[in-house]
Length: 61
Image (cartoon, rainbow, N blue to C red):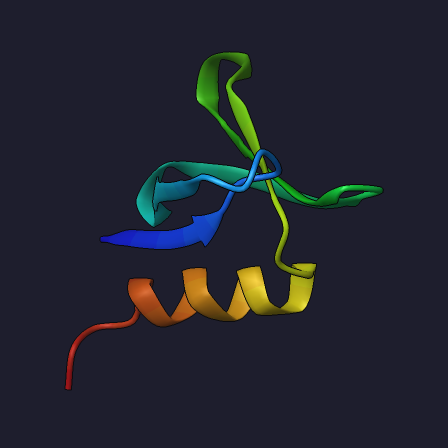
């Protein structure tokens, strides 16, 4: 599932929640890491990012 965030450069950023390996708080917002050293920094706070990622990974009811 794709989740939409606002990137640090103010562009819309789509993240595949199934590929996220690590999430951390940084000065600019929240850094979302993927495999192979890839990452994206988004403006949303870490709590909101985690909620959005978890919601997208839950089985649909």
